[in-house]
Length: 204
Figure 1 (cartoon, rainbow, N blue to C red):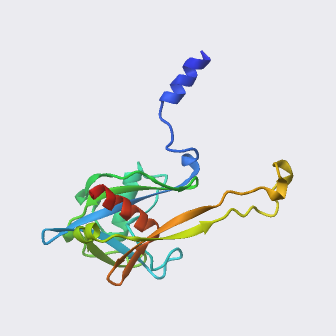
Figure 2: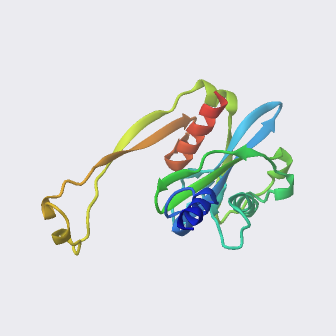
Figure 3: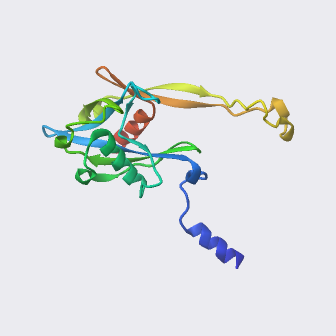
């Protein structure tokens, strides 16, 4: 009885990773736009009045709300709110693997075609400007990388007395990869660059 129940649980639907249900979950759309018979990837420059990451380059997207039927629904809703694009006009081509930045933050990326005729306005409260990069350019130009050291810093009330070696415990340090694409006057980096790099690798 116990094993049957366990097998049923193990073979049933499971979260992508432990903690997914409680993580900050967001979804983005990587928009493809055909301009004069050439495919481009569309980017946003976040409004300089935004509280978080003003001026950064991003894809349309954001937090998955409780009212969103799925991560894809969230990505399409955010694209509509930020760029004014009717979700019914977006042809969704597929998705990339979710990007787990940490156990408390995951991003679900989707690829979709946006009609150029839909790009006539955008939400100035969230978007400073939009620009496009030819897919051909992305295939021909390699990004470069910098490494950011990441070192755990326990809080003052951390219970060192509960663990072996106490305050002399050797915490594991790591390095965070930060990729950069330079296109004209635009620097694409951070999460957007990580997703873009993965997308370009798929194309190659």
